[in-house]
Image (cartoon, rainbow, N blue to C red; front, top):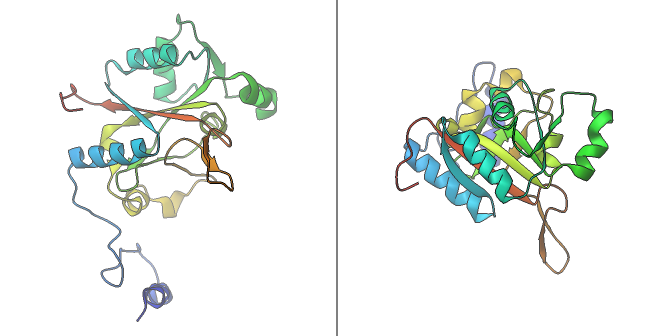
Amino acid sequence: MSARNAILERLRQRADGPLSAPESDFAVVTERGWSPDERLARFEHWITSVHGEVIHATREDWCDVLARVLADKSVRRLSLGRDHPVAAEARQALANAEVELVDVDRDIESWQREQFESVDAGLTSIGGAIAETGSLWLWPTPDEPRLISLVPPIHIAVLDAETIEDTFFDVVERHGWANKMPTNALLISGPSKTADIEQTLAYGVHGPRELVVLIRHASQLTENL
């Protein structure tokens, strides 16, 4: 039986309950058995291979690291949410910095043009990451709408190291996507890129030209990070 027919047959026979990973016919899609360090290394390898930038920090100093990133990249206007702990901590830390904080928890018509024309970067929290593909996943909310990760020239994503999982299937299962799927979910595997007919690659044409992943670690960083 072909892989396609096997999938269709399983769907026909399924009545209820969780959909488990297949045991035959094609590669297993779950439980790679990687350790946390292996997940982190694989995620960083794949996201940086497509021009993503990874910066490590601890839970205690990540706001200081963020401030340095903003200064190094000459960010003067930063769009971010308000209620999520990541946004709340960043707002407090940047209160006296030379960065204008652009509120996004308002009617989109009142700030859409501002977002497209004058914001230098957008800051978002991240639901987690996928080690196998080097991808981030996030669910936009009214507090952190999708435009702040898709429109500004620079997207700064704050990722907790312990939320990196092996595969996309693991993410879907562990977080119950089948039961509470949002109207919009984003998978981000690098900065925006496109190519013309001559295969000349360009970044930032249809979205952020830079993706900075700030990975927060619960404990002191080790020397090999």
